[in-house]
Amino acid sequence: MRKRKFVVGKETQNLLQTALMKKMPLTITRKHGEDWEMYKSHIISILGHRMVIAMPEGRADQPVMAYDKGQELAISFKKGYNKCLFTSRIISQGRTELEPGKFIETLMVYIPEQIEKIQRRIYERTMVPSGEQISVSFWPINDSKSRYVGELTDLSGGGIGVVVNNSVNPEIEPEQHCTVQFVPLPGHEPIIATSIYRHITEPESDGRKIGFQFIGLETTEQGRMILRRIGRVVTIYERRNSISNNYSCQHY
Image (cartoon, rainbow, N blue to C red; front, side):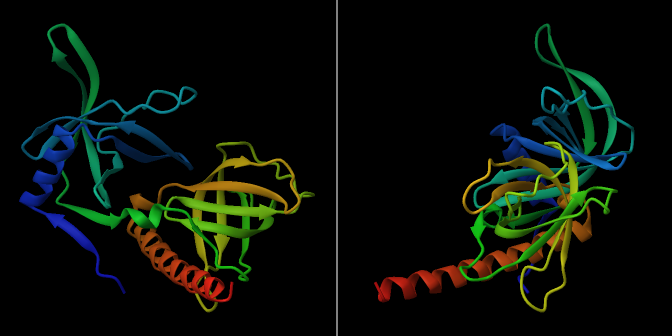
């Protein structure tokens, strides 16, 4: 099992200072009712064991984030070859003056004791090795009766691609939250995760392609365990694809 990588103490402060100076985008994930929501932000300032971030913003059709003191947030940002993940809690809401007369809405949150670093390559789409058929079940969250089945085409820490027959027309709206379930390798436990139903293509000769984006995995230890499992599967898929490609080239 690959050893987990953390930064702690002064290294945590240094990493966040770098994110501040380079204005690195933050992804903020929180649970709201039964759904997960994702927002964008950035660090405004660091004050001891607290930091101020810009009020998180979502898509145009998303409401402005309402804050609750003490609410937990999952925060991530990209640096180099890693994605940096940590959880924090809201201290307060306020306004910060960026320059004379120019204010923005902000949140103050706690600086974490540690930040986990996950290799970004696991978030790159990896195709399922040729000849392997992996069934995927998916359904709208809290509605397991409306269950659909397709075949896994690609996998990453960010989501999955699924092909369904052209006759399948899921009664699911774009951006709707779904549960996905699949066994990535023989003998493995199933991966079960919450995802966002992003899109479905028009019918083609090989079926219709659906894109799902995982959401909420960074927020819990169980979710981060799933991310690490996905990382190991991605490595196996890459290795098998490489062997298959080399074999094909040798017999061309």
